[in-house]
Amino acid sequence: MNPYQAWNRLLVDYVTRSREANGQVFLSLDEADLQLIGQEAGGGVKDFLTAVRQEVVTEQGSLNLGCIQGLDADGIPRCLGYLVATVLAANRMKANEEAEASNYFTRLREVLDLSTDVEGRPKGMPIGAEEPLWQEWNRWLRRQGFRPTAKPGEGPKKYINYPLSQALLRDHDRDRLHQLFDFKKWTNP
Image (cartoon, rainbow, N blue to C red; front, side, top):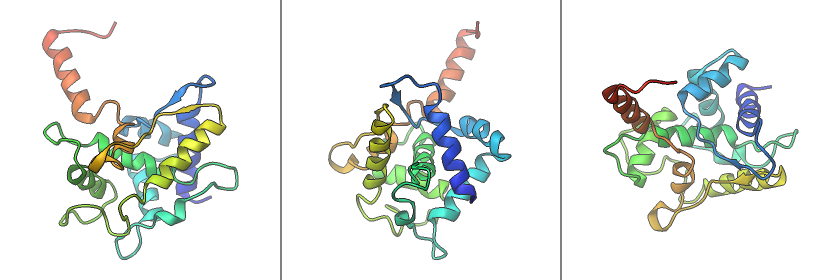
C-alpha cells in the first residue's frame, strides 16, 4: 500500500471513530492531530504532507486531482488525505488574513510545497475542481450514517468555504486562546 493510501485509511478511522450514528463529522485536524495519527504509521506531519504531494502534485508542479477521485478497493474516498491538507492550509491562515481566496491559496501552496511566487489557484486546479471531492466525501459520510459538515459558500468564497467550514479553530485562534489563558492565569482543571 502506498503512503497516501495508508494515511487515507488512518484519517478515515480517526475522524469517524467513536462518532455516534447520525453524528456530525468535521475534518478539523491540525498538526498535533496529524502527529498523533502518524504515530500509528511511524510518521508525522512531514510524512503526511509528503504523501499528499507525491499523490497529487505532478513533476511539472501542477495538481492532478483526477487521480484521487472515487473510492478505493475498500470503499474509502481516495480524496480524504488531500481534503485534510486543504483544511490544514485553512488552519494556517494568519489572524490578519481574511478568509479570501488569495489568502487561502497562498497557504494551500505552502502546504503542497508549490510556488508561492504566483497568486490564485495552483496550476491544474481550475475553478470548482475541488467540489466533486468534497461532494464524494459528503456522500460517503451519509452512506456511513454520519452527517457531513463541509459546505460551499456564496459568491467568490463558494469553493474555499469547504475547507474553511472544517477549520473550527485556526492556528491563530488557538494561539490567542493560549495567550488569554496565560494572561488570566487560568489553568486546566
